[in-house]
Length: 448
Ligand code: NDP
Image 1 (spheres, rainbow, N blue to C red):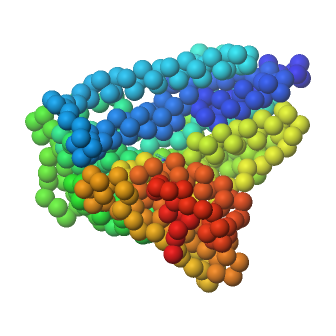
Image 2 (cartoon, rainbow, N blue to C red):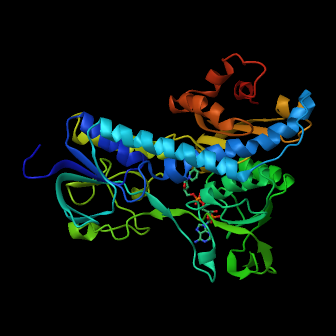
Image 3 (cartoon, protein in one colour):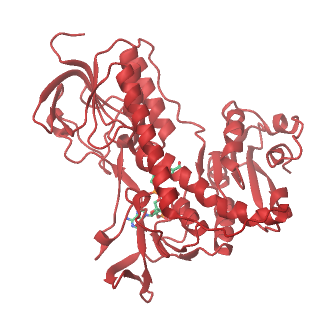
C-alpha cells in the first residue's frame, strides 16, 4: 500500500456492486474499507430482489393451492397470515445481512456503518466526523425510488416500505407499470387484495416485447387486476382509516395503501462529488468510462449509481471488473450485450436480446417464430392461461437476435436459453436439439 493514504480502496455503499468490489480487491491484496449508511447487502438483499422473490413464492401458493384440488388434494381451512410471511422474509433478510457482513470481515475489509461523503479526489469524511484518505475511491451507492410530486404523495409508500407493511391492505393502488409495479401487483393480487395499477402512459413494462406485454395484460386483467392508463395520480387525501385517491380525469376512490413504483434515480445527493470535480449526468448519475472510472482519475463508480443497466448481476460484474482491473492486474470490461432479464409477475416473463420491434428497426429482414401454448399443468387445472415463447431471428444469417417468454417458470428456462443466444447460435441449432418431453421448455425447440 502507498503509505501516504489510510487505505488503498475506500468503497462507499455496501450493496451488490460495492461488496463484490471490496472483497475481491481485498483478496487481491488491497487494504480496503467500506462505508454503508443503512444495512450491508444493499437494495437487492435488504429491500429488493431477494425479499421480493420470497413474497412472490409466498403469494404463489394461492395458485398452487387452488390447482391442488384438480390433483386430488383437499386443503381444509385454508388461510393466510401476512404477518408470518412478512416476518419470515425479514428474518431471511437479517440472515443475508449477516452473511454479507461476514464475507467482508473474512476478507479483512474494515466496515463503517455510517454515511460517507467525498471531500476531494482522495478524501472521505464520515458522519461521525472522522476524516479518511484513500488512494482509490469507489462509489457504489445505488439508486433510490423516485416519487412524483402531487398533493398527498407523502402518504404513499415505495419499495423501501412495502416489505414492512403492518397489515395486508385490502385495496392497493400502484402507480407505475414497470418491474416493481407488475411484480407487486402480482403479489398483492395473489394474496387476495384488490389491485389497481395506474400509469402515465398506456403501456406496461416498456422495453419488453409487445406480444408478451399484451399477454401479461390479458392474464392479469382476467385475474382481477384493474388498470387505469394515461392518468397519473392527481392527489391523495386521508379519508378516515384509508386514502382517497384522485386520478386525472377520474372520480376519487378509496384505497388502503398506495405504492409508488415510478423508477429509481441514482443515489448521489449530498455525496460531495463536486469536491472532486465530478459533474453529474441529467438523472443525477455518475458518468464513467468503460473502466468504471469517473472524470476524477482516483474515483470510480459501479452499479445503479451510474445508471447504465439497473440490474444486480450487472452491478456485480462491474464491481468484479473494477477490482480485477485496478487491484488484480487482470483488466476487464463488462460486456453489456445480450443481458437476460425477467419480471417476476404472475405469470413471470423473461427476455434476452432484441424485441421484435427493435430487431425490425435494426435489421429490417427478420423472421419471427413463436409458440403459443397452454402448459399441461394449466390444462389439467382448468386454468385457461396460455404461455407464449417468441424467437426473433436474422433472416439472412439465421442467428437468434432475441428470445422472449411468458409462462410458468419462464425466468428459470430463459437463463439456460440465454447462453445459446449469447453464444450466437442459430434457429437451426435450436431445431437440431431434440425436445425434452413433456416440459414447457421443449417449446423452445418446437417454434414455428
Ligand atoms: P421502471 O423503470 O421499471 O418503471 C417505471 C414506471 O413508472 C413506468 O411504468 C413509467 O411509465 C412510470 N413512470 C416513470 N416516471 C414517472 C413519473 N415521473 N410519473 C409517473 N410515472 C412515471 O421502474 P421501477 O420503479 O419499477 O423499477 C426500477 C428499476 O429497478 C427497474 O428499471 C429495474 O432495472 C430494477 N428492477 C428490476 C427487477 C428485476 O430484475 N426483476 C425488479 C425490480 C426492479 P412509462 O414507462 O409507461 O412511461
